[in-house]
Length: 337
Image (cartoon, rainbow, N blue to C red):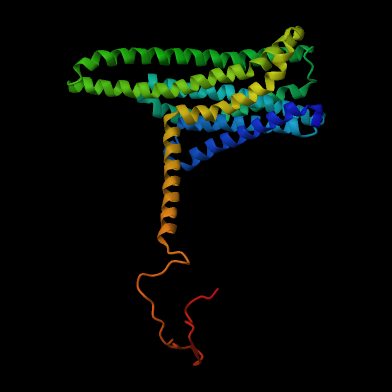
């Protein structure tokens, strides 16, 4: 096998990698095809899905191709890019939910300006940071490598997740207050003012459901990359031997599975994805039923007509052509196959 990987590792990782590519590609296509889903939140979702597609491509190449020294270096850079982009996109989409729930009146104006800068900046910054180790030898004993890894773990991984935890704390604290207020207002539901407040509370609750999806995605992202990050930190500290061998063996499976979880979360927990999928499936089912009913209404070859057919003497039709010739029986304006 390529790079001496056993079949028991290559086959499941290849299947998972292809599944990651297919499912996240479907997420991108769904956002592109359904016009109502083209919003700023799903723009961050597409950016995250693209990084997951690159994760699947990277693992498929690693476990199915013969790699040389330069290609291994390029693959390591690609792994670093998808790690940084994934963390930054989850931070960005959490910021999007933070604005939508805590500052709903200025959300659209703010996010329309920030989105155009944030997504390109995430990718450019991630590519730049990931390419820095190419300027020296990738040895964990070097001081440059130790400083770089410490910078990555603190600025590119830890800091975004501190912001994610803080934003989610503020979001769910507000939601709890809104739910408590809704219970208090439910007693006076006949009051118009109370009804209006109830509507606002329901909107916050619905926005919070979307925030919960990304909170779960953030948690899954941390868990999926934890074995790799733990081993990297231990290697820099000079204690790589404390990492269990089983953890290293499951590390690639965790990363690939983490990229596969995101589209599953969107499909089952994100309301607009559920509606879009239901609409597409319902439309496809209606189309198939219409085709089936159309076929059933057409008479088959062996069917007989209810009106008896009495053959008579065939009459020959004569048509005048442009060259003054005449032809019999055939309609000159009917295409013949």
